[in-house]
Length: 412
Image (cartoon, rainbow, N blue to C red; front, side, top):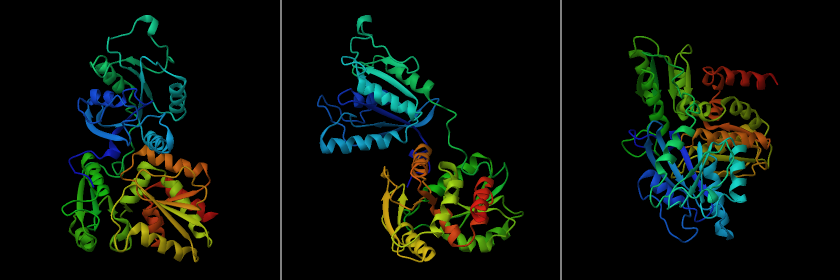
């Protein structure tokens, strides 16, 4: 859950610091942020798990810096640390590769930079520990002309301002997430949000998808009307004119669909997030695979966050029950949550993913692309629930590409 006054991590520009052990990554992130957020030491491998720091970096806006373990860590535990580092890489909008001036840019660093280029992640290279300032010409390092190279010292703050300026100039302002709901409403429109009080939400808070949708509506100068499912009919009757759209928690789909006149567009928070962060059309196509599951098939259920299981938990209880009812056989289920996402997903017949409100767009796109590469169908909680309730065509009608995908699979 998030404070409504704070930009969620998933919506911040993500900047990761990478490099070999003892390159000074933690000292560098402390110098850039102006705070001692990462533990530093002369001992190689001090940083074990990724360290996150959210802040404002103008004119870029809300960002999150992530300090990572050394890419050259060794041993069984070191291997796990490196895996965690590569998980961070999946969500980065910009990478800073730190190297020690006394060792220079090694072949190891160069190979990692090539990985960044293949993944189309913008990169800055910082040669740290230049405590005496810019090194003599004989010690200067040659780099690829397209990779900015900055000499800096976290200890003396030499070059840190240049690093910050380069972060800003290397950031892709055009790589912003698509609108959540802003393109579905105009200034002055009314959007009705049906928000059952989720048992998993702490007292006094709305869950994150509801918060973010409200913010998107307000930014469009539209009007958000909030109601619970049992008051929806009354709320619609009180409006002087029909709303531009009704958005509901997926688990209230059936009642909301019954109480919302057919001429009013209706969808769910989960479907909105599938469109913004992933590939809604692909997730609509994925629903067809569930119809053809056979006994023994494996289904992976993925949640981007962690929470305490409820008595009738959506991911652990309801979705498996619905899938067994659809498939008519004994299906095997496995679950992953948070940042964990298997590299090899080829053993699964289908993946059912949550809305992904806690994941940024880069991470969600990675997950969808991995499924596509390995020939695994992927769908989404909201899409599956709408399908189970028999209202999928209506729930995706506001999104032409998704409706076309549904027509395509129905035709086949």
